[in-house]
Each structure stands twice: as C-alpha cells, then as structure tokens.
Image 1 (tube, rainbow, N blue to C red):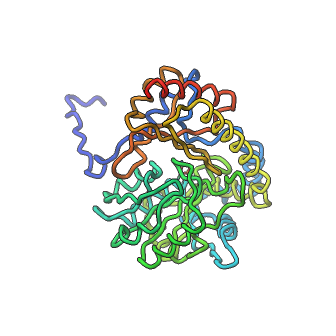
Image 2 (cartoon, rainbow, N blue to C red):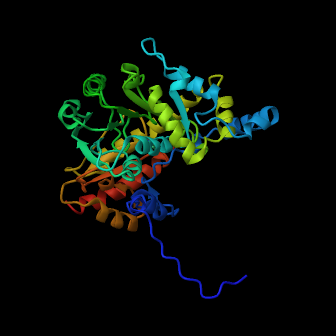
Image 3 (cartoon, rainbow, N blue to C red):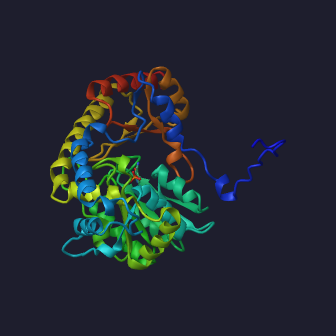
Length: 397
Ligand code: PMP
C-alpha cells in the first residue's frame, strides 16, 4: 500500500539523546582504516592474539553437548560457572569474592553504562582522572553528571586531592593499570591511599581494569578490590585477553549494587549471550589463559619497546612521553603551542595517524597531547611511522 502525502517525520530527540555525540576516535578511525596509513590511532587489540582455533573447538563442543541450554535465554546476572570462575580469579587470601557479587555484562562498556544509569543523577558529582577513558566519559555523560577532574602527575591520580574534591560526590572512576589513554600505573602506596580516602568519605571507587593482566615486566600490582571489597566496584573484560568480538565483561560489587545493576540490565538486554559465556568458560576453565596471556604480553612488550626506541630516536626535544609497563598505549605531550587536532590533519597527509588527546579530558582539555597505540603495528612500521611524525612535529618547533 502506498501512503499519499505522508507528513515528514519531525525527529524530536529526548534531551538525553541530544547530549549524545559520536566518539571522536571512531570518526578518526574511519579515515585511518585506509591501508596506506600507518595508524597508531586504534585501541584495538592485535588480531594475531585471537585464539580462533580454541574458540572453534569450544563452540563445537558446547553446541554438540549443551546446545539446547546454550541457545536458550539465560539468567540476567550471567552463566553460573563463569561467575564462579571470575570470583575465584579475583579472590585473595585477605578478600574472598563470592560468585553472587559478580554480574556478567556485554563488554565492560555495558557495565559503565549501567553504573551511570543506577548511580548518576543530573548534576551528580563524578570524579575522573585527568585524562580518563573516553568511552567512560561518553557513557556517564548521558546521565548528565558534573565531571570533577582529579589532578594527576606521571604516577597517575593524586589520592590526597580526593579528600576535598570527593565530598558529596557519587563516585570516583579510576584506571590503576596501564591506563587508557596514558599507559600510567598507580603505585601500591597510591592505591592504598586512594582506597583509604574513598572509604573514609563513603565514596564508591570504580576500578576499571581491562588491561591489568597485560603487565610486561613484573607481577601485576594488587587490585584495589582486594584492599576493600566492600567499597570498590571492580570491572574486568575478556576483550584484551581473549577477543573483543565476543563482547564479554563483568562488574564485581557489593550485593545491593549488583541487585540494582541486575534490574537495570534486565531493562537493557535481559542478559548477556548465554552461548558466548558458555564458550568462553569452556575455553578458559582448564588454564588456557595461563599460557595464552604471556604470548600477548610478549608481543605487546616487544612492540612497546620498538615504539619507545623510535620515539627516543626521532622525536624532537620539547616533547615527552610515558613509558608504560603494560597495556597498549603511550601518551605524548607536545610543546603547548602545537594543537594535536591540527597536527592529525597534516599527519594523515603523511600517512600516519594517532588520536588527539583533547577528548580524553572530563573538563579542560589539554590540546597539546596525543595517544599512540603500538599493538597492531609491526616494529618496522612503528619506526617508519614515528620517524614521519617526529619530522612533522620538529617542523613546528
Ligand atoms: N574500559 C577501558 C579503560 C577500555 O579501554 C575499554 C575498551 N577500549 C573498555 C572499558 C571497554 O571494553 P569492552 O567493552 O570491550 O570490555
């Protein structure tokens, strides 16, 4: 049937929807996908690390042996054995985590959105690091918070500043390990101090930790969750240690919050796919990650070294950068007069790309910063790309 003279739709988006913006990074990624560009822009894990064969075997096994369960609706809080696995992997001598404190999510990004939904009102004070993970700023923004930037130095956020800034706030969002975007790590002393200050203020402390297992050199530092399980909301992900395409993450929190998150998740997607949760459990239950994670660490660590060497060789004086001990990112600070958004346009002409730093700030952006990812580019290309970028920056000093 053809409708005569339909009234053109007038899209009246909600005030909430009007706050939504496309991620600056996704827009840039579109340009940098061109094969001639050496891109340090993406935050994608290296596909060379995806355990395709193991997942194939696990999918086949689950569908053959438990197909009817795997393809059915499942519980909102997640697949029991996997929640149990997560709880055990996070339990320490001093702090036992129970499976009913774990909720599986469709990527940890969904956990960030759900936390925003249940904890943030319009104008609620939310403390974030300077800079912080862009995806979290985006997720929280939808609920209209007032972001309060916690001062940071090369050792990450400065805990003492939270004692005053945190008064009356709803939560503090922190990334203690190989932070996105800076690659910085919070020392054990700062972790203890932060947990202590938040506990005294009664301020929920979110510990977002998708990179924690990717420590290159030393044993990973203790999690803030283990220092105070009653006051810390821990977020983990299988994206960086298995594959991001399966969209699987988790939130660990005290029961009253888990119950509220469960209600919010029910409204969002009922539950995370049962099939992928069962396949992931089948893949990891007998210790696969113990041999798999070291191979990811080795690859990333070699490429990180290649980039640090190239930066030392090719970047002019007046620039500085972080020296990560794990994870996927290096953060560069340029002389103040160089705007990294303008620099990107010129860099793309020279077939090299990065992410400008501005969007990673909750409040006042520092436009003379940028993020480099080294995980998807082989060492020879890293040198070539950093050489080109170094020459371009040198021409502006
Ligand atoms: N937190 C941080 C700090 C991240 O860098 C990312 C992914 N880039 C996420 C959360 C979301 O990860 P995922 O949804 O894939 O688990």
